[in-house]
Amino acid sequence: MKKLFFNRNAVLIMLIFSVFTLFSFALKPDNITVYMAGDSTMADKDVRTYPETGWGMPFKFYFDKTVTVVNVAKNGRSTKSFITEGLWQSIVDKLKAGDYVLVQFGHNDEVPTKKTATTETEFHDNLVRYVTETRAKQAIPILLTPVARRKFDANGKVQGTHDVYSEIVRKVAAEQKVPLIDHDRESQALLQTLGPESSKLLYNHLQPGENPNYPDGKIDDTHFSETGARKMAQIVLNDIKALKLDLADRIVKGANAATVAPAAK
Image (cartoon, rainbow, N blue to C red; front, side):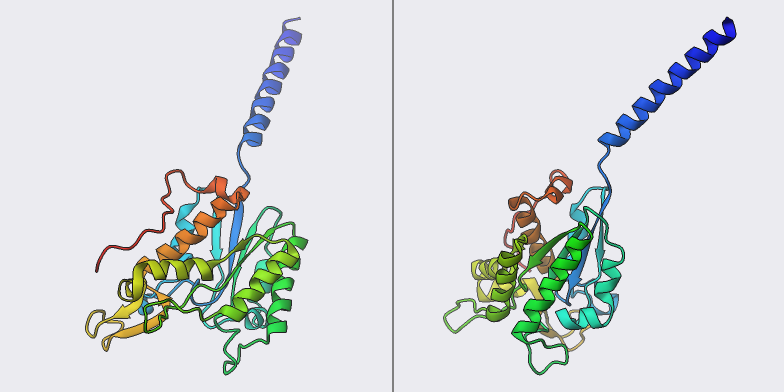
């Protein structure tokens, strides 16, 4: 009888432990991966190019431990070359249900003199492919218009440089019913707020002798400084929240996503 009583109690304890274990796993959120597909404005940078910073670099620090951000963006890539070089397939092969893919191209697609250039039709169709193949893995695509270059007219009004290709991204997002982050319009708005002079702080503008990586100085109105990369990442973060994506629930509490003007240099 004592042996039977012991066995019954042992079984009961094991059952209770199993229930609590299963319950704890049920409460714990699944780990997901956010993949980033894009060009130099998003990409991780080598130390030798510092302080040039892709906005994908600070972006990864806004999420809790359930999120891994994998930045596959590379300098000089277009929707076409990202595919032909196998970078896109490297994402597709690892995608799992619930993952996210942020897709941002245009800078290198829209320049006809570049080998990476795509026609408007090719750009459209490549974006559709990214969306379709992401969804086939039950992952979530997010399309982003290309982030703004710094360009002002003589009257200090910001000028768009991606008008045609940004509109194609908006069109594909509407056709495919994909979440859209209009990085072009929103970054232009930030530039306009800062104005022609202060907006230089967002880009890789350096005086001669200011940084050993650029002894002769640098005037680059396409690639970002650390401050600029953070501001562009914060625009994306704000939109993830505004779109009410499940990913927003994994943003660290207290993360400040306000796109405020940078401090004076």
